[in-house]
Length: 64
Image (cartoon, rainbow, N blue to C red):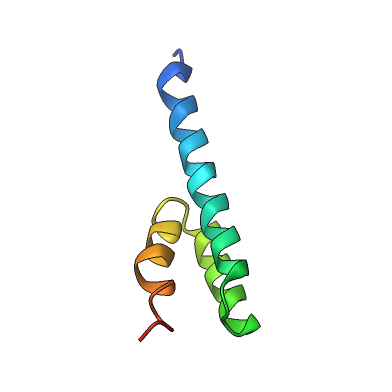
């Protein structure tokens, strides 16, 4: 079984870019440190959905 790296590699790179962008945004945000740690864990542990959740829910949580 041959792995199609031509398709998989760009998806992995995009996922890593999304994850790093979310982590950097989370660290620079003005949230309590405990909330930052929770979001970093969500971003890292829940793969693609974690960073998306952060950008949809986490960034807007204190901007009411």
